[in-house]
Length: 138
Ligand code: ZN
Image (tube, rainbow, N blue to C red):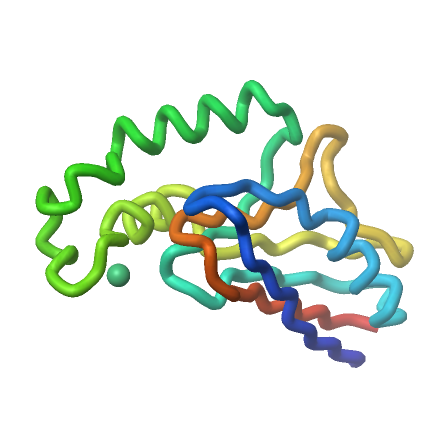
């Protein structure tokens, strides 16, 4: 069995952003040389997500509005967590959007559904953060 590991780094301009990382993950699959196996991609931070959904800007605005309803960023004092930090909302948003995805690799390619795209979801950005990419198979 082969195994491959890589970290992808991000430094977003905004506190919250969604970044389509499907092309980068496809490059990882190519680099790994693995034809049949599994790719795991997880955020290495507790205020960021990796998730699969549609790459459609209206939907991304809907996610932003929905997440702000569930866990509004402000007022910061509404959260017990915000004693020394201001990112309680980011922890909650990350929990809803998920930590990781696992995608099958078939014939050397990500075996995604027709509209599935893989996203890095940043909820407390403007600093360097990363995801782990682990691929196993043969
Ligand atoms: Zn925190």
